[in-house]
Every structure is written in C-alpha cells, then in structure tokens.
Image 1 (cartoon, helix red, strand yellow):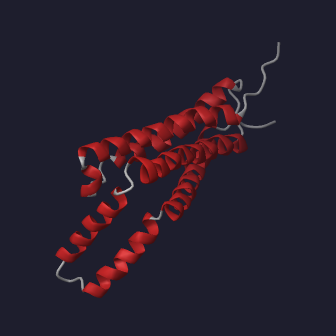
Image 2 (tube, rainbow, N blue to C red):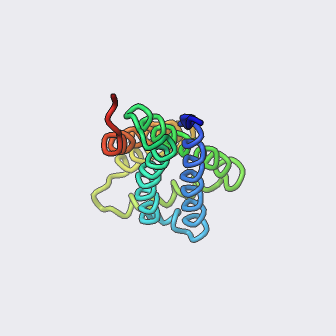
Image 3 (cartoon, rainbow, N blue to C red):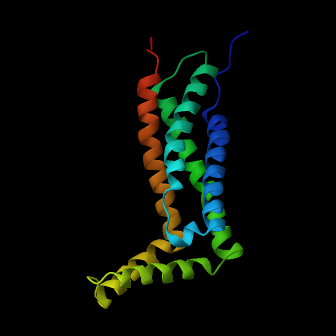
Length: 172
C-alpha cells in the first residue's frame, strides 16, 4: 500500500490554531494581570520564540508524514499557512475583545500612552498629538488586523523558507 501525501492544509490548520490560541492566552494573561495597560512587552517574547519553533516543528512533522521527503514549496505552504491561520485566530479574538469583552480598553490604553508621552520633557504638545494620531490609526482594529496578518505572513514566509531549505530532501 502506497502512502498518500499529507495535505499542507491539515498541518497548517492544526498548528495554526495552536499558535493562535497561544497568542490569545498571552493576551488574556497580560490583560488580567494589568500588564497590557502598563505596556509590558516581555510576555510577547514567549510568542516570538514559539512562532518559529512551531513552524519548524510542523514542517518536520509534515516531512515525517510524507515518507521523509520534503520540497521547498511544501515547506513554504505549511509554514506560511500556519502563520496566516494563527494571525486570523488571534484577529478574531482581538475583534471580540475590542467590541464585546472590553470596548473601553483601547481608550484606556490611549490615555496611558498619552500620559507617558507627556511625562517626557522633550515632547511638545504638538508632537504628542501627532504621536497619538499615529497610535490611534494603528490601534484601529481593521488597520491593526491587516498589519498583524501581513507581518505574520512575512515572518511565516521567512521561517518556512529557512526550515524548508534546511529540511528539504534532494529531488530526483
């Protein structure tokens, strides 16, 4: 009996959801502990480490399930799909959070950022207002979501390309 080639979509869906749920868990923990309003970024380091690890691991599992053969194209499909799916999972959570769970949070976050900017003696009120307009644009759920998906896809492409080049098998 011949082994069937596994689909990249199956691997991407499973690992993409896992990665998205990890990011949601980090978001919930930072929100509940108050670290999100404080602007603490260190919990995101967990995600920045897990992102390439999950992509590399998924590519290696795909190779294993595919009779230990891997083409660069398949590695890119798997890794890029994982990155985009995880971003979409987190995006759905982000929209639910911003519109249902705590619609006031972004306003609170903007005020905290304004206060931090005003503490800097080198910042004029005009510069603070310009900075706030830029932040408001990036905190817009739709612009922020598009940016998040694009950045996830970009880094997913890079990590899957690296993983594919390292793990690919020679073709006939």
